[in-house]
Image (cartoon, rainbow, N blue to C red; front, side, top):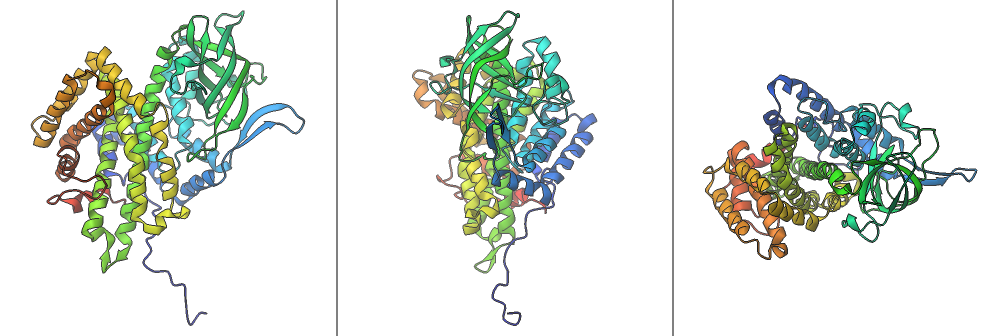
Length: 545
């Protein structure tokens, strides 16, 4: 009744909406400014702020919710019984994907500071809805693999880097833009792609093959083309498989089912069968892994960026909530124990963002030294950043109490999404073994990483001691496989520490080095030692709404 209200809403935070997701992220803004040439910085900032405002808008956030509430649906046949193998998506999915394409998230290759601006945009857009970032990532990453064949690159690259989202299955020659997926893993092999059994039979036309086999995980099956691995006469080879043939006919691409995944529900992942499927070879026959490795490196960086984006959004939601919610006589954000938790989460998020953007800058540089740095730093960063995402997302949800367990808060979607990037493009053990492979075969990679770390020498005694401990680990590679995770974790933490000591505010670097390198913390978030300026760390992480 009006005179006796029983449902007055008080002490609830306003929605975190109507803000610039990019501009409110101080660590990200500073990283972009640090790694972008002065002559294009204004252009890049303007572009990213426009994307950030879109990401923070109520309309776009609603699209993200709708795309997950109404997941894709497989249609194997049309009403007449013809095999069509199409995937239907909610309109919100297409709006998100179209915005991502128009924002340049498939194109780091043709613009100044292309990788840094695209990486920052990818990190921002992940915070809206991570599923649509999968086809954006693979389309972007297909470019270096296609460059193994200049003719293929000349044909496809303009479509992949286009700012136009041209949906629908038609011959690629009729489209203003195209998306790519990939299919590498099979039931019997998983990450061991050399165990693949899909066969490639040469056809009469040079460079063309017929594929027969299956793929256990084929990402984004609605795409225009796919890079796949198959066994040709000379061994494992990379192929381009178009969904639609030049004459308009459908290439045999039999979608058996869509995966029912823990998270990433807006995005379709499929099991597919090839049955005489037409394909063009990419690179040399028998050199499939070498051909596709640059694509894998690019998508691995996107895994780190995606996890950094998820972490940033989780921290932003937690800090925002605690900045408005009152309990026990004051705001949660002012309570010493909650401040410790929020500061710990903020440190993890900023360290992830800072390292991921440093890797993007190395791609833009392109020098031999930076390429060597990436060879070791990418798998190390992918391993560590993606590992930290899940516990951070869970802790951030807990900061909202029971509200964080309710779907409407958005935190459950972040929690479900948080393990994905650790599994995608090679799980933790694959990344750790890749680091060992680089250490053994490419000594220049270690030299480049140590050079980067050495730029912070003398700036913090805890960092210097951690570097010495890392040297001790590296000096004894006998039987190292069993402790590879320990080694990679130390490498990633030292890289993060060296960057924060050089570029972050003193209170952030001090807290990171004390807890992550000095060992003065417990096993869970919220166990930072006394004597740190945690209020400043939390304030730096606060989103402006």
